[in-house]
Amino acid sequence: MDFLLYATENPRNLGSIIRTSVGLGLTKIHLYDEHRILENPEAAQQTDAVCRRNRRNYLDIVSVQNPIEFIDSYENKYATLLSPRSKRLGISDNNFEFAEDGLVIFGCESYGLPRAISRRDGVEKFVIPTVDTLECFGLAEAYSIIVFECLRQHRKLPEYRK
Image 1 (cartoon, helix red, strand yellow):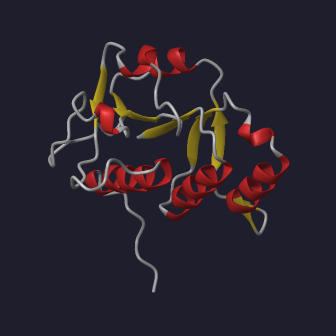
Image 2: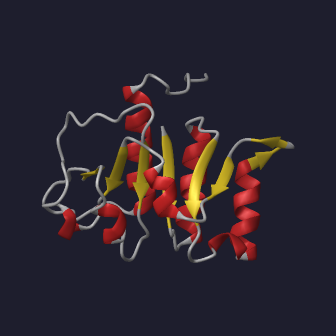
């Protein structure tokens, strides 16, 4: 299972996503960096500190130059819809299953995923169900929930260390 962050805007969200990825044992994530967030010196320093500790590389952030070609290279593709406007477009089934060789795509904070991706042939859309008082989860929270669920479904969660 691979994960693509499409045009993440907020360095703090990226930092949370990286910490979640390292904590759950992922070795790489893919990033289409439209907003050049990694060029921000503060973001780059925080990212480097989380990704590498004690000279050990914990997480590779793989740059994606052409997101459409990258997405099309996967047979199983899942678009994460976070906006309350998107609830009618995606599946919010409690039994949603991710293919082990799939790609989960997360859109940016302000506008989500462009239609060229979310409505692309073969892209299955889903929504994290929420109670009526909460419109949607933020990007970092949704990422944590979805990555955990993908790993749980494929029995790839890290072992608990005491």
